[in-house]
Amino acid sequence: MRSGARLARAVPVIAAGAVAMLLWLGSCPGMNAQRAEAQTSGGDDLRPVYANAQDVAEGKRLAETTCAKCHGVSGISTVAGVPHLAGQRAAYLYRELRAYQSGARGNDIMNGTVTFLSTDALTNVAAYYASLDPAQPAPGNEAPAGPDPVLAGKTAAAGCAGCHGEAGISKTPGIPNLIGQDPKYLVGTMTAYKTGQRKNDIMKTMLAALGDSDLSHMALYYGLQKPARAQTPSAGDQAAGQAAAAACAGCHGGQGVSGNPATPSLAGQDAQYIVAALKGYKDGSRGDATMKGLAATLNDTVIKDLAAFYSAQTPQAPNVRKPLSTAEWVQRCDRCHGTNGNSTDPRLPALAGQRVEYLEKVLHAYKNGTRRSSEMAAMSDGLTDTDVSDLAAYYAHQKPRAVVYVTVPPR
Image 1 (spheres, rainbow, N blue to C red):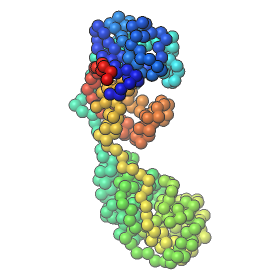
Image 2: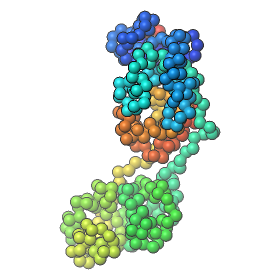
Image 3: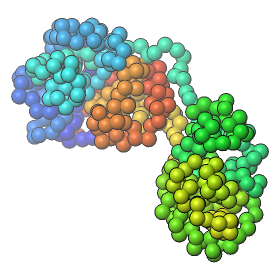
Image 4: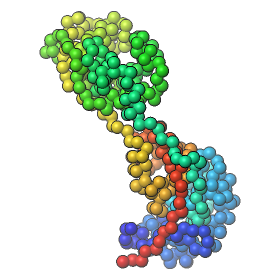
């Protein structure tokens, strides 16, 4: 534990009964004498505040008249999207109530409910809810866990190896390499084949039974493979192709490595596939107005030269990271929110046993910026919708535990 006045070497004992002690954040003009004596000197934002049985009883009375309709008399919410408060950390509750009171949190109902409550009232309500037994975890033995997306992608891609080669490295002339491409481009291309926007009966049939998640997993799997050139021959003049490729660099990159997820990389691609694609754009069998205009002036020799140049270039890995598993995300979340979501930091909320749809709502709010926290924004930025669902389910299934804070004498 950190020493000094910031924590005042004291932390709250949260329990129903005679005396509870909680950590109160902020200045305190409305405190009674007993609480004022517990304050440390200076302007620290974390100070010990004592709440006795009378304070907790007053908090209960106020909670029953003000909060129970949504959060339940016992702090166990029965309303979808409304959090449980029982057993939550008192300092966290107090700080959130103050945030609603100041309008910093965009919730008109909560803002209006707490607007006229005094500092003591907020402290008492926080102490009351913190003194209650937490909600039981969501029913079920354990939280559902989604599949490993990379492994799922590899499994889904097994049917592609016959044409596109193991790990997407083509050995068949006319069949494209799949690695070295941004997953967004691969998903878009597969979707175009699946819907018939791109004409290829074999591809349409192969993709017909795959859902959106399968396509995403396959694209991720190929995006994470070590880039390598197609193991196929090429004809044409590479030097002449390099000169002709100057007009393509704006979209496909100087060496055929695209910086735009929507635009394919050409480096290391099978030469015959590039030739067929350019001829398709030229005759209109491939529909892209920009590419049709650029290919219209190319003769067969220039097309072969371009293909020879690009097929000889070294592909690069796209900017894609292997996603974290639910267990890995949990390890990151537990650093602040405690083991299995049982926070031992009075400033941070416990997650264990919380309503699953509330956890999902909050994580999405941090992701889209409607709920602001620089730490949570950074943590949630890489979460997919599946990650959010899995994390919320995991913590909703954990057993919540009341926390006991022990007073530590100064050294």
